[in-house]
Image (cartoon, helix red, strand yellow):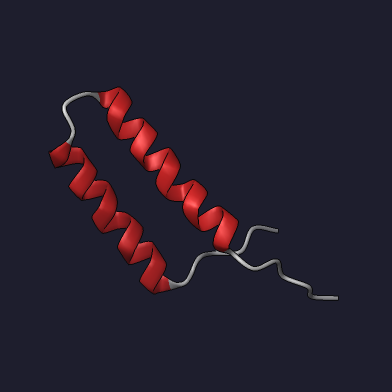
Length: 51
């Protein structure tokens, strides 16, 4: 089961994606930026240990 990120992080990601859309020249740069953004939070997310 996938766990949703907290609302504050989802908001941050949404704003960063918007900043990337307007700040980069090519679609490839945008895609790399978004991938890096999600990778940053995927590593930082604590593992859920529900039994």
